[in-house]
Length: 190
Length: 188
Image 1 (cartoon, rainbow over the protein chains, first blue to last red):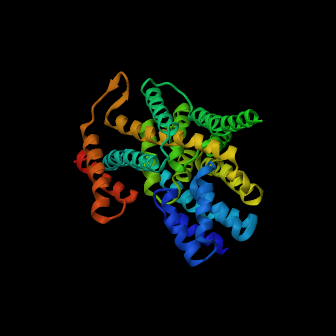
Image 2 (image 1 turned 60 degrees about the vertical axis):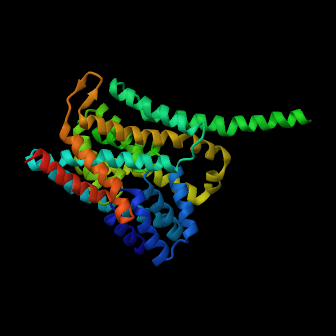
Image 3 (image 1 turned 120 degrees about the horizontal axis):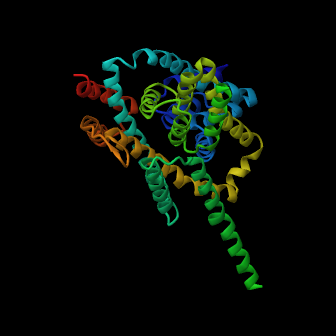
């Protein structure tokens, strides 16, 4: 129950998505409740970033499991999801009524600019953190340009394929080819 | 039928998105436009709301899009769809497969994907920015100087703010500014 309530609070009070949740999680789960150590949290974040899905859900599931097993993970995840679900559900009913109001529409014109900027900043921040190599920088630029060209020419191309391409390239370039190179080197020596 | 489609589409989005909510946006946009659920402008409204309400962006977007198409049940199913893949994957990892994360092939795949995600997110931001200013596709350009002004002012705020207050401007504050400028420029 305590797990559920803690994550309910985290879900209800964080704005701006998963990364904004991290300080809150550190404060509540590590410092106050001592359910996890700082190292464990860092490990969870690394796992959360390298697995699909929203970071907040990943962290909640993992933390919940650590504390109380399967049901802990269910309750923690529910706790993080429920506040957003009900708030957004309420807003989406309101939205239908207010979207034609002139003032609201004007406010949304402003919000759109903020949204574009927020996404762009999030992307640039990730770019700063990314290890810049002969692989990552060109690939990032190619993917970015491809998406923009697709958009301008109104071509439909699912980003799922782009991710699969990245996964395949990564598997071959960073695992299989180095592995084979190592093997052939060994055989040369023998 | 719409319920099943919502659930499955969001399951797919949940499964293929890395890097959190922002990484999902381009896929959500593709899905929403492909099914004709929302216009691009509505999609931006939704993202604005998702950013300015508490909770993970991915959950907010799934609930919002789901509710708009299938009421409360639609919202619940879309949210469940987006949550389930990460829930199951993390649970499996926590129980048995922790060593997989550290294994070389897995790390290689992740290093392969990471730049794609960064490219996706930056492109999504850029596409939203230029379509806001009026560039819809190669042949349609209706310049909207007011949006450009707002975008410029907000960009200045988000660059200057950390220098003055020693921390990043919160998304909520930035959205509050944008509402203010939006009303001044578009409604008055």
